[in-house]
Image 1 (spheres, rainbow, N blue to C red):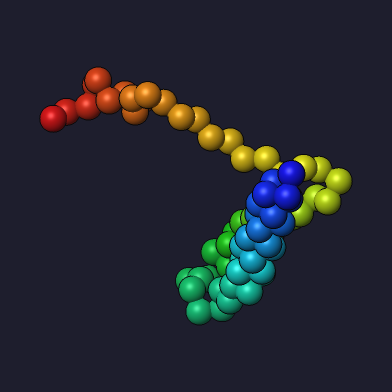
Image 2 (image 1 turned 45 degrees about the vertical axis):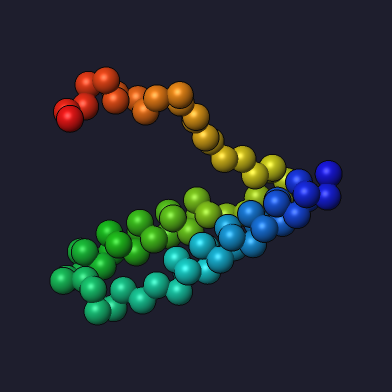
Length: 77
């Protein structure tokens, strides 16, 4: 149980760091015009919302493990 709590704590710390990174973005010098700036600001705002730590909701991550990579039989080479 202690390992699981430690893992969740580290995950919440990583989530907080990702959100802080997005919040710290400075787009002043990367947009060509006002329209691009508005679109980028909206996308950044959406990303910040997506990275919110909802304390009453458990963290969950999806992971699929395959014996063979999907589509590998169709790959060339």
